[in-house]
Length: 410
Image 1 (cartoon, rainbow, N blue to C red):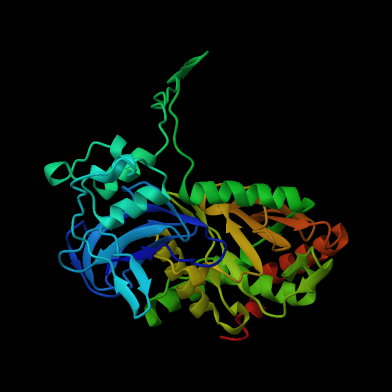
Image 2: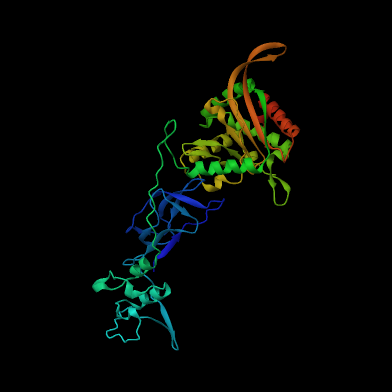
């Protein structure tokens, strides 16, 4: 018996997916758990393993098509089965249920009282379908052998006639010149919805701080050399920033929280799962470093690198995109200095990190060249006030300006 493979609920609010690539074609034999398609959700590209073994009878959509949760992704069956094969209906008698014969029934001599369709060649199953759909068999021209009316004939006759839609016409220019339209799909569509959700549901305020990271630059260069020689790990500035953020989050717990709007409660998280924004060709993704407070610099460096690569390759596990409590976005790596980042709603806050650059600062009464970095903290003003946000940033700045303390757990 042919079985429909329904697009499953992948969790995390995923409601639909785009068929990125079929890995099988109609007629192929597949094994249970064999991937049959790559489906792009608004989180990642995931391979869909077949829950059944058998022959691929039907693929529900072309590549690029959208399939919603609960809709048929593909139909798998046995040799000789077809998608349109209907199960023989049963009739109930005093001795139990008996399958109705599928033999052709032809009424040779219709009586005057017989219905108009009595002389039509059709199986009982097709006749029943016609009755259910209120279709007059006599009005149908059969396409089966010897003019027999088939199930498809009945379904076609029952379908409401609709006029062919006008082909979609979209101008490739506007009043000022040529334009190119791109469909809003996948991560870009998810990001658009998510950003609007954050803007609509939170009271967002951004505060900024300048950090003298001269000592951090020196420390990172020294440790990075050792790390590459001893462990083969390249240390960026991000693990240092993660360590400093966690220390500051512990002093300011409201930063590591979210709003339960239904209960009208602030939920303060006592664990530290830090999301790291990653720019991919398809849009922004935020994989999460779980239990970041329990990891040393080298472990953080490796995990951030691995997650970023998995996100860039669209191979990141959905579980690695869940559970964040606070996020960091490093636009400095692209040469940017200032920004007003939007939190990964419903998280209460996000830290933006600008590029490190040379700048004159007054140190000990003298103007000297220093390495400086600009930080931007956007927070939900419903959850905390500006004073709390400023205190968080001040503590963070002091930790980054005295970075030796970040090495205590090495």
